[in-house]
Length: 159
View (cartoon, rainbow, N blue to C red):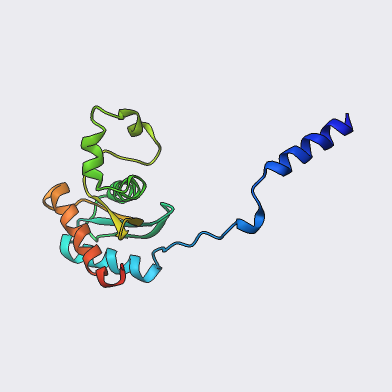
């Protein structure tokens, strides 16, 4: 039995990729300062009824701001919109339209939400985060404008 295990192990190792070709993966990510700047700029445009969430490339919350007059549920909606925009690399409103009929099963994934108000944060074609808003006067179209304003406030650093 041990001879068979040794032969199998040798065969597996012979077909394994060489470690000398392995490389570290490098990527860009949002700093806390950048995430805070995006959130503050979006809040200034959308007002104190709004909650804003900024997530990093892994979908983790970096910043969550709740306006002084925001409803309690807005924070969770903002987080899920940001997560949806980040993970699908598209505005959450576009993803919501796309999944109305095709790929509707994606709507069952945890933490996504088929509502507008979330925008991906990109460096070129690389999505490094997402920003989501909830509770803005003017609804989801205004939330997207405010999200874009927040992203625009750091655009010179997203290169």
